[in-house]
Every structure is written in structure tokens, then in C-alpha cells.
Image: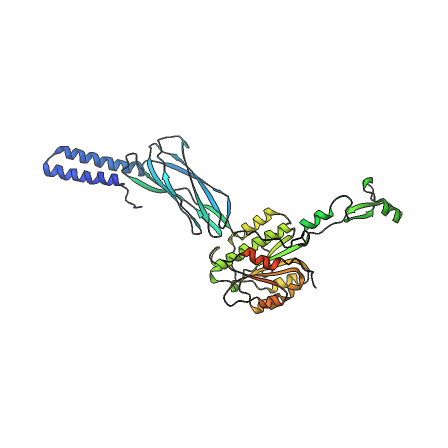
Length: 414
């Protein structure tokens, strides 16, 4: 919209005022001079009501949902509170949308009446946008074009400040690790079968003063000739590790500039959160680390959906970085036996596969998901014992996951 302060009606009034002055001078008609003066006063008075009369405005903004994933629709609500001694005619409003958020954030600003009390008039605005790219996206401020009561002049001004919207990576629903309960090795299956009265995981221990007499294990007491009580065997929840490789050397140059700029890296972040969500649901304690073994967040307990959501939030702003050698990961895990180990990486070289080769024999389910790049191959990693699949921004992550996870868990080899 033009910065010219007059509307079409105001411009016409100004032109007519000039014409009246010229006609009054030409035809010596004093009535035209009065009409021209009246129009001029009205035009300048209209401009003064917008730029000189004090007008207080405040805007509050809210998002639904508060945190969105890529591809989600977000409902944006605005409440504009106005305090002005003069009414305003109908105008237009628009909200500033950043890159990565798309939608129609414009509309008609309704006519408002006069009022001196704070908060006496409030205008509710609402629109819907779609989150397209991961990151922290600033929504706003809202711009309003208001006109004077006569519709001669207009003014565009901004109200309030921008509010950040957190856009996380999309979480893809992945298939279970195995068809039969308990095969995945997670606690969500095993604990159900072992708890309860008379379960096999009840073992006797020596009686301690204060123990309930109902817990006495009479058969064990007779066998050992001393009082023994039942004690539930302590079970340990299995652990899984998800590796998000952020090393800049294995990604496109755009991956370290800003969140959401490299489609390949975005696929990797989405895969990381999706795999973690699947393993947490399976009953594993999931640790997310980088390629050098550095922890990304605190371990997520089995079944902790809130922990998965927090992981997505923590990864909303990550980009590629300079460091990221796999030797640190190997040093951290080579001396232990772990459950599923899922490495999400970019352009994996033969040298990288050689470094990772020993880890395949320390995991019950070693998986490598690599973002496909021209000329890349996962054959060396597969020969080392890894279950491999290539993923691309346009590919089906769920289908790639099925190819590496539908064979169940294997026994750990040390």
C-alpha cells in the first residue's frame, strides 16, 4: 500500500479544493473560495486526527498449538485493545510472517467507536498458517491501516512485538521392532509378564525384623531352616542409543547456516526424533548423542512421551557443526553391550564405515540410516554387520525403517 496519507476520497477532496480555488480566482466567485477552504480544512483535520491525536493500542497473541511440528496448521489469535478519543472507520490489517511459515495473515479491521477508558474496545482477529520449516519463527508484529471517521486520510502503523513460534521436526509414526510382545527387548513388554503374585521373578531373602509375616516364603524357610521372605527381583530397563550425526563434512553446506535450510539435514532430524519416539514406546531408556558421543539431551525414560516432546524442542534449533568424528562414539560404546544402536548420518564414507565396524557387534540391533547423496554407498557398513537403509527428503521414512527393523533383535556379540 502506498505511503500517501490520503485515501481515494481524500485525494478527490484535495483535488476538488484546488479546483475550487482556481475557479474562484477565474470566475471571481467567492462561494467557490469558501468551498475550497472548507475541503482543505477537512482534509488537514482528517490527517491530524490520525497523526496528532493520541491513540493507545496493545495486542496479545496466542498460538494453537503452542509448539508446532513441520506440516502442522497453527491457529493464530490476536486481541487488539484500543483506547482513542475518536472513532475510526473500517481498515485493513496484516501480520508479518517469517520464512518457513505460510498462510494468509490479512483481513479487514473493523470499525471502532470512541472511548476513553483503557480496554473499553477490543478487536479479535484470527487466521491459520502452516509451519513449513523447523526453527524458531517470529510471528508479527501486526500492521493496521486505519482511516479517519470521514475516510479522507489513512495511517499504517505496527502494534506490539513479534512472538516466537517453535517449529519442531515432524515425528513420523514408525512400525514396532517385532511382531510378538517381548521380542523387542523393551520393558513395556517384559514387565507385564513378570509382575504379580506368584511370578517367577520373586526370589527369597533372609528375614529382617519388621518384614511382614505375609511375605514369608515357607518352602524356602523349611529348606534353609531359617525364615526367608519373598523379594521381587529388580529388573533393569534396557537401553537404546540414537546417534544424530551433525558433522558438517557429511552434509550440504547449507546445513550449518540455519535450521530448515538443508532438506537432507531436516530429514535426519525428523528421523532422529521419530526413532527415539519409537524406541521409548517400545520400553527402552533412550539416549540421544552426537557422532562424537556427546549427549544431546538427558536420557528419556521408557514410555515418557513428554521426554520425546522435549527432545523435539531441543532439536528445533540444531544445525550442522564443524566437529563430529566417530572415534568418540566408538570409544564410548566399544566396551559395553547395548540394545538398539541407530546411527542417523549423511554421506557415509568407507573410512567412516571402517571406524564404526566394531560397534555393530556390541548392539542387539545395529542400524544405520543415511541420507542418500549422489555416489554414496552403504555396502561397507552392511558388510560389517549393520542393518542399513538410505533415506531422502522425498522418501518414506517409515518404509526405510521397516527394512531395517522388521527382523527383530539379535543377540549381542562381544
